[in-house]
Amino acid sequence: MDKLRGMETFIAVVESGSFTGAASRLEMSAVMVGKYIALLETQLGTRLLERNTRRQSLTDAGRVYFDEAKRVLEQVSIAESAVERLRTAPAGTLRVSAPTSLGGCVIAPLTATFLQLWPDVRVELDLTNRRVDLVDEGIDLAIRIGEVHNDDLVAKYLCPYRMVICAAPEYLARHGTPQTPADLVDHLCLSHTVWTARNEWRLPGVEGEVRWKRDAILRCNDGYGLRMAAIAGAGLLLQPEVLVAEELAKGKLIRVLEDFTPEPRPVHLLWRQDLRPLPKLTHFIAHILAGAQTLTSP
Image: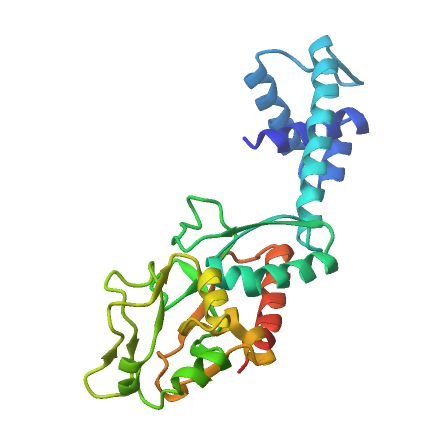
């Protein structure tokens, strides 16, 4: 038996004063009302109602059960109302995972404007290049760079993740501007130690694939440090476009070898399948889709 339905039936019997009144209120037969009461009494091992042909009254156990059952159903109603509010307007905590660079430059600013629009939402933004498990780790939304191979998740294309080769005007004035990857042999390279164990750039579009020489003038495990070194004129830099967009716009860094940069990789939004996703997630996804197109456009 549905215990909550049994409680609801018992309360209706007490408040209406009869099985017939409860049946009319609950839109069921008086016989079914009687079955619910009988099953409740059997489960509890005691009588809840004293009844005869003229009237009914509560036993001591019935009075206690009536008060407690009403409290239980009130709490259920409060819980259902809370969930319904979540489904009508964005509210609650949203857990988001994003790659470190893209997350810091694109997702974090967009999250800030989203929170201004929906102050009842709280966001936990985890910036990591590790591939998180959305189900095991309770993540509502993940942003990933590269192809997606997971049929258990919903994937929505967000934007291309472009790379750019650039250098400071002062560096180019001293060393010249490379026109093809073959010219890189005469240039200084700034390399990220995490990107490749062999410390090489691989540039498409030329026969045999050109790789940067192994003895980079500066290696660093932090993209910001490499960017500051490039602005100071230390050498050529290969980084995601979103990280150097401001410096490129201000002329602090100049694009080179635009026809030979690595192919852009796709960025996707990933979330768990749900027939009715909560508004906090659907509104956040819409906000990220709208904002990222502007921030990452060429």
